[in-house]
Amino acid sequence: MPQLKIKLFDSTLPVPEYQTNGAVAFDLYARETTVIPSGAVAKVPLNVAIELPEGHWALLAARSSLHKKSLQLANGIGVGDADFCGDNDEYQAALRNFSTQDVTVEKGERIVQMIILPYARVDIDVVESLGNDDRGGFGSTGK
Image (tube, rainbow, N blue to C red):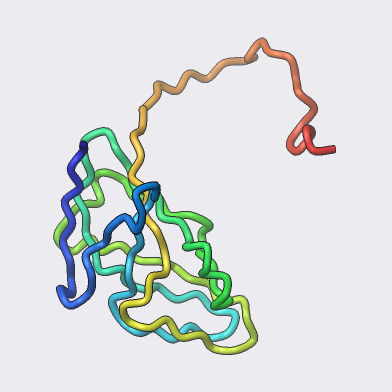
């Protein structure tokens, strides 16, 4: 099994762990209480710096309950590259408050989840034509 090294910034918070045997992601915790004004975006520190296993990347996604707080990841998902691995490279969640009131994220609250995935790099080859039939455009299969 690949090894993920994690540095915690606040050791009073739980170590991230898979919550069930079938879980593909582990939750990350807010390191500090953060108030996000209505309509604004704020960064919430997630208490971890990581060193990924070779050939892997990290995907940050909203926990399925995040919308109940009127929050969403401002960038949809987060991509953690293998070289974002310094002692002070703390992961953060950029959260957008889509409500009409301020929202507070409490210290220790689980707000996002991280999935560790393998990747393959590719050589990019620019061509004049792909030589394939067109499918009908973006969104064409859901007519």
